[in-house]
Length: 181
Image (tube, rainbow, N blue to C red; front, side):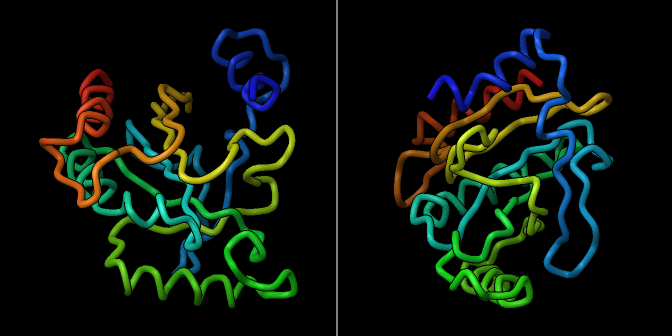
């Protein structure tokens, strides 16, 4: 676990000479627009790492929707980032990016996902040795100007299903971190 978090820890302490991985996170939204994490024009950016085969990811969608509303009050933005490898999302390894896009569009419709979903480029990989992201779901709070991580949540940002914001202690903690930003 420490070896996969070491680049993040070194960056946070200023000991790393290499640029952190998240500075190169790029992809395309489901409607084909380019996405570059460094270019998001919001003071606060929340990136949630999502997979359509991840039950906790699906369970936390109502909490993410609530969080997106709170972010809009602070002129922030929330994005769902998806590893671009189709085989990580229940599709065959031979599946195309268009097939992955169609699979994700079905989730947008089924779960009424309002936040932009981004299929990330190959430089963004989850659950691989040395990867910044160790699995799904993970949620990262960033400040911009320059882009820097403020908080990394491992696992879902809520603990109760069905989700009730006022009663969920984990989500109240998430909101307290947002308020501190």
